[in-house]
Length: 193
Image (cartoon, rainbow, N blue to C red):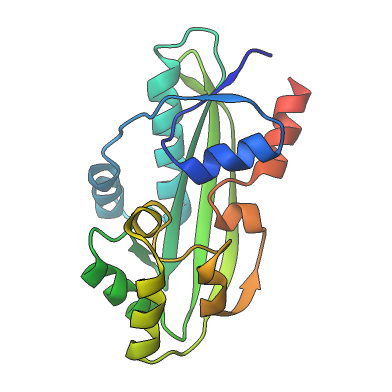
């Protein structure tokens, strides 16, 4: 197989692929995720459908331009009691998100799609459950102070592979799914090609 094309600028997703000996070329799709999410929410789409549609849209957009190439699109959403929580745009919003998740169980849904010649040929969606500890506003602010801007905006409000693990009392699910890429299923599919 020629190189996989990753339709994402996520450094974590690229690192996960590299750690699993899947070489890839990065070509971000630059899809307006907020616009798509808003449209899908207005149609009553579930968080799983939103993640899947975004992953498919990203993969298809790049694969239309790359004839015969295999393109991987991915998307993750946080589902808190039916509400979609998006990445923060600033530190105030990051604190508001942490306050909303504080002491509650939420789901992180990661969807991946592989496309070829502009059409999806495979997809997989996985869900992990995370229960956040009950923390004071001061503890939440202290946590955010430890996270640099790049990490904060790239990995949503928590980095499960780093400082973020300390936020949770219970984590149920695949760690790669939580980091945005259920790589075991991707490997299974790629190896079947």
